[in-house]
Image (cartoon, rainbow, N blue to C red):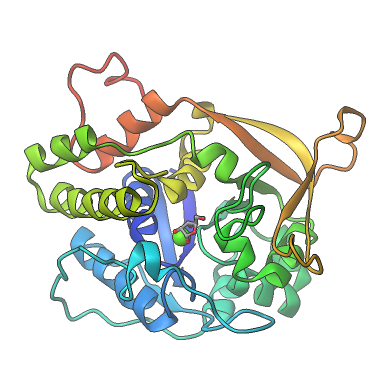
Amino acid sequence: MTRMIVDCDPGHDDAIALILAHRHAEVVGITSVSGNAPLAATTANALMVSALLDVDTPVVRGAARPLVGEPIHAALVHGESGLGGVDRIAHERTITSDDAVGYLLDVAQPDITVVAVGPLTNLAHAIERDPTWVKRIAGISIMGGSTDVGNATRVAEFNIFADPEAAAKVFESGAEITMCGLNLTHQFQTSDALTERLRGAGTPKATFAAQIFDHLHDRMEALIGRRASAMHDPCAVLAITHPHLLETEPRAVAVELAGTLTRGMTVVDQRVSRRRDQANAKVAYGIDAERAWDVVMESLDAADPESPNAKNP
Ligand code: RIB
Ligand code: CA
């Protein structure tokens, strides 16, 4: 079974990614980072998801602020708590340690992939402390960046924009990187129909996920008039657990740090002549969304028995 560490900023889609990862991989550990909400909130949410799943996965607290500048958050979408609209689950769980960087360096193994679905601050600190780290893990699957539109700005995606210097260090590190940017995740959208299936399932996981989908739909309806939301972070898990569901291409990716309008943009070299020899990442361009939803909904206890892919997602 695939082994992974999930570095995250829960966050509604992070929570779904954690549930999916625990269904299809051995999750060695969870590291938290400031992002969608402040570090205390994202760490509390990671602990709450581990309580929901009743797993003993260690939760290790990470960075409270980016390498440069002040932390930014996404309360407009995720609420002040990072999991707005979701009933809190009472539990007694606590973090295993508050040294995510030391943890990432200590548990590194050739068969462990780091799935990074928040700002890349923890990973950048690990690379700073030990540049060989990236060669001691299998690779890094990133939800972040974009080959086209941004969301934090016209051209920058939130996870990169929240800590561009960290993202630049990761893309320059020589790690085996898979990048699932907004160009991909926008192809993987939730719907009220999926929410209804979750409510119908009625298990604790499905009910938790239904609240997540409902909250995201309420926020998207308010912001863009549409009851659907890109389910970003699970894509970075699927890239590792179900790579056959994604189409990737080798690309050279760099992070803009200085641009007045473009800071935090992932600048992807899409010139045909430059695609292979200078590539530092596998960039995802396509997803089999129907099969991917079969996998995700099954992990949420809401498989569609009528799906033609039910037996072999
Ligand atoms: O831009 C989407 C990303 O930012 C996702 O990881 C979401 O959880 C937020 O962190
Ligand atoms: Ca996230």
